[in-house]
Image (cartoon, rainbow over all chains, first blue to last red; front, side, top):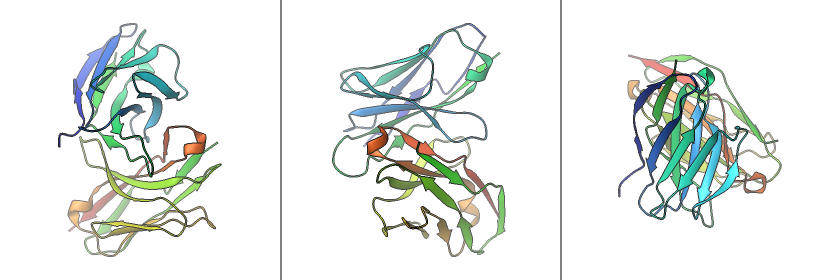
Length: 114
Length: 113
């Protein structure tokens, strides 16, 4: 069983640029969520995708957008980068169904905006 | 809205000491509760969970009991090891409040030999 993989692991961008982060979900999982973890903080929910549609969104502006593909992999896109977007971006996959919705996290993509 | 309040760190303990990390929550419905652990340079890993009141989650010597009356889910371990050094996050998932997980700010634990 493969876990959640994310790419790239580290990247540096300048303010105003755009970035795309990628995530492959764990085998058998059909739901992908993205979280932003600022330094010293807990993860904050960005959005979730299920059946290739956004299925819940946190308090993030529209310049944060995403996609889910038929193989359940996902992308997070951030436009017009700001300095405060510097953070660890975590992808988590899960299986929608009865019972607790346990998240399985990837190792994250660390974004630095200069 | 839903939220999690977690004991602030950092916490430093000697090996074999007893560990408690406090966590309280606010939720509108009937949440599931979780503890996740994050080792340096890694993502979060599920440590344990509880899905209803009075449930006890346990794993690797760690335990936490879902207390509805005190809205708490404190993490405990009787004898910590150096390898337990990590950041611990309390979290809740409340289906009536959407699909997101709410995380606490994390508690950094360092265990010294």
